[in-house]
Image (tube, rainbow, N blue to C red):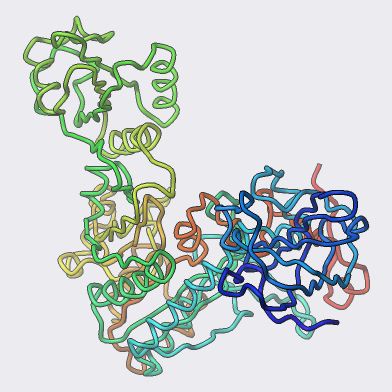
Length: 580
């Protein structure tokens, strides 16, 4: 094979006159006269036009080595869309390194191809400029993260992939043991317990780019297996953790975008829900939720006799037709609202609404004034309990206002003081919002047991947990951990976990805490999600080399597949027939 001297996408006018050898795949072939053809050769750096004599037998995706002289393109043939658009290779000699059958789709970003077909033939899809760019963006993210954590004196430690099954909120993927029939390992949902053991072991500052597995339903920002940046710090507060993570994320953004973000504002969970109706607020646009409860404090309109009334303003929204408004109302009801009130501000300040006759002049003026509405605007109002109002209006806000993922720049925000519990089960036990090792808020540690039996008080308790959000996507979560035995036992009691069950499920961590556990806190964020956002992608599968499809199947390897009886016998397993 002829040795490569240069990459296709790096030749410029400075190389004119040089004899070079380039290698790659045929992206396109265009006939030029009876014998000559223009062959666009593609490698990972881009395209290069080669003028080839006798190219009739060259086809798309053939692998070639082309040797020739770099020369300026003839006048009028310069391609401004290519870095190499001012030059071409002439006087060429071609070596066919590998022939190719016609591919199932054209390797061209201008051609839209079904995603399942792309994943089935991922080895071809990876040749595209789109995937090459995305995977290199991801590589820059990983490199920047490692550099940032090493600069801040963190130690990279690899934790086990075969562990005991522990309750972490999602289903485990389990692995049967051949040497211990009837028993199973679990694949880690996260390295949570092991990184806390590292803190007990005096590591002080740990990090890992960890592969994790969760058997949960898939969506655009979720796969069965995912990669996260996992970190933990001893003798650290939540504020210190957030500063370290912000530094690493800023490095990743600078490495991929060339601009370093410096603004990482913080907002409490309650304020995020109150203002944006979401615990992962997209702060690239306005349309904040505004409280209207006082406006209707003396209303005669029964639908507004509710504990909480909020509204959002859609500027220029008065042009929205009745069909679209009816569809929006139906969606609001589907999200749990009792209804959705819309008010159009028309010429002269006239209010057009199905409920206009039920509103007093003061109430109508109060809505317009409080929301800051002007002629041509649309006011949308929901009345109910606070949580329900915030939830529904938050979804409507995203529905009507969210810009595409690659518009508006990078807007990070930390959300803090999450609820400690997300629900109470039928037995009256609290359900943790994060995990059982999250430290309660400092103001509520001493009185936490007083909340038992009181659902509202339980749901009102705060934790020292925090999330990092980027453009409306939750990148990751973290918290200050419980390191005191008495607090941990109180949490277990509130969760309905007795001493024996706690020892059975978490004994190796609890035993370690008996030997001197330092105060510690940590965080983990999804590298798939961060890389997708930095690449301007809506779907994390676009930054994963070999993803699963939306159904969880792998069209490339056909996984999951059955295993043969010999393997089943070795593992002591039998497969039940499908349920009917």
